[in-house]
Image (cartoon, rainbow, N blue to C red; front, side, top):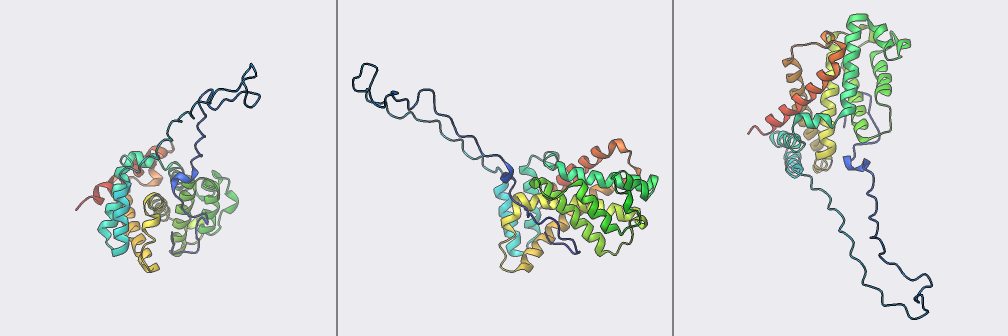
Length: 289
């Protein structure tokens, strides 16, 4: 996923989610299947061994589960990418959420992204109530007080989601780095000078980019490579990004709370609820004809 800033995110790329799944264990043969006499061809009396029974039929390998509902999501995403049709891009995103079981179920499939967003929310809360130095101390980064904000957030990224790991971790890391790149492009100064608005934008960016990354990983990786020119790919991705970010921003504002108002004990619930509601909105608006 491209960014407008200087940080390029994870170099591992976004791969299909099933890459991380362990290979199935081979099916063991039934007891006694394929047994032969220990002397290689005679029975216990020295006579000819009986004709071996036909090979026992093994149970069939389980079929790979069909990606229920994702066909429609991919079809719409592909159509939108080929024709720059924003409505088809939205519909593809909405059908992905529907196929995932709704917003709450889709949110629970993003534990690392929720953890990173929760870390940003905790940082913003501590920054407002205790100051920048104490906010950094909570993450063992107190030595970076006064450093450029983007440097602090890259260091925070390495703590919250270090490079290497699962695909979900890579999505969370890319989301964080891309949100940091957007912040850097906006020209923010030192970490100590950040405003509540800056931290809110970073938080919304992380949530939005991670949802976008999840959809691209599971639905649109191939679909968004179909345009012949790179500009077509970027247009399609920007359509998806704008749609998802709009849903996240609407749901965040609907809650009427700023990050610095949150109690530390409710941050995890706040973040999960925001992911679930934003994904539900993606589903509803995506199917709005």
